[in-house]
Image 1 (tube, rainbow over the protein chains, first blue to last red):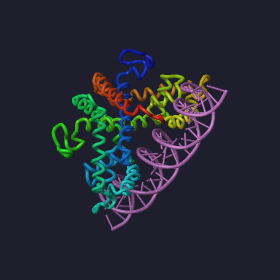
Image 2: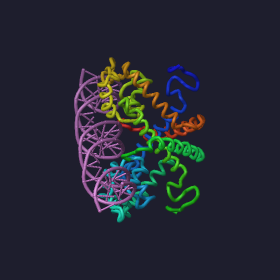
Image 3: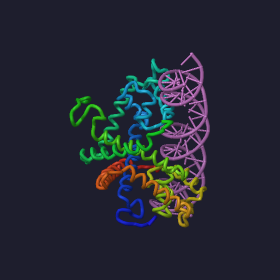
Image 4: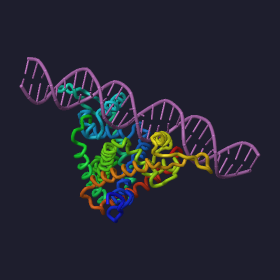
Length: 164
Length: 164
DNA sequence: ACATACTTGTACAACGATGAACAAAAAGCA
DNA sequence: TGCTTTTTGTTCATCGTTGTACAAGTATGT
């Protein structure tokens, strides 16, 4: 019974598996959301990755590149590529830490704060639009499920992330 | 009351908004899932995008590049980049359609089918792992929510997709 | 039949993300 | 103190994804 023993709980094909189907739907929804957000943000000349950065600087002023990368679940090198762009556009500032000369402390400029607020309104509106008709209580249940998954996955990956 | 009138239903900051928080969790879970899947697939020398292609060829033999791109919600040019790689590795075949000389019909080779089955088992196992402890009924509810969102977003984007 | 519009796949340049290798600074330890 | 190890940020080559422009084939309309 090593393989191909299709039953109700262990279906033959992945796409007959409820959890599999559910996850595919989640992934596709995310993909579409990103694409739609990209379009709606285009007139501000930023993309979802930039917005993620800006929002985190909005919340956590003075954060370091390392901490930012960890929050966004991306590599440090990624921040090293994107942040100088935002800095040149006058949206953020990078100041060296006094005590620890390795770290760069990040903060929004006034212009960056204005742009971030504009972009966040667009994002919030998009989320509301796409959830139209979905009860808040469902969202909360989904959030709980997802946070459980995140915890599980973080535990698996979390150890030994030399380059994150 | 144009702005910054924080109430229970219309909080001041996006991250106090239940739907916003919920969606951020979904996005992060997706991101982690992709990263974890990338690692678990690495010994097969394929990445999530390749697996998406292979699974769809497994389900829909003889599909065209256009149809495949539409199912995956990516551009046609993307398929033009990835498919030749898989073809050179002997995992798929591309045969020109007899009636319509523009379209290339795609199918898995035996080697491709074997590799796809292996990879699908890894993916299914990962999904099961990460959902550990989550009732199937929750998954079904999540799937319904996501499919509703997908429909809404597709309607918004769907029209006039010249290049998809 | 012919001209026009659309569809299918490709080529290309631009961009975000990744991991590896590296330099500088800090922390830990002998 | 001096040595090693870790941490922080950068650089670089690579890869997936995108949109535009393009060529070839098909459909439409007169």
